[in-house]
Image (cartoon, rainbow, N blue to C red):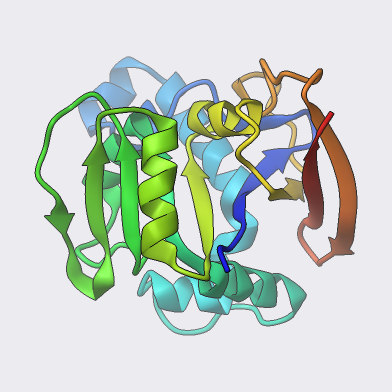
Length: 221
């Protein structure tokens, strides 16, 4: 039996899943000095994602060091990882991650990158292999389903790719970690959603010490 297609993302209270730019993550000292916005955008990103960097399972998975919080939020991070048999992501997210992920990326499954770039598969440590798909989101999802078997497929991001899958009616469920942060500007997760095609059914709402976890089933309207 095929698993579900889902996504799981952090979102600010004013609806943003990312700051105005992610360029600050990889910026040099000189670039930061020339453009102070880079530091601000990076700080916003870290504030939005601060909750997950504190979780024990996440820290262990990325080899960030010992310690970390345990509790329901940590369990949710672990459950999300364990249910995922393959992931799909867009080219922009991959390009950012290619330069910032460690030699052992955090996926430990096949990852299918939706891109126009022709490139051989890239095998990394820990069971992660990136495959580059040139013929659209449906093809990438089909390959991911085959690779995942009876486990779920995660649409890993970024926001534009996630929205494409949602608008295409290909998402079964999603979870939002609603963070007590206001960004004011940036990438709105649901900007451009085709609300005429999407009906949401609340599945659960779980508060934790740092964020509120909201899960919805997605149905066609």
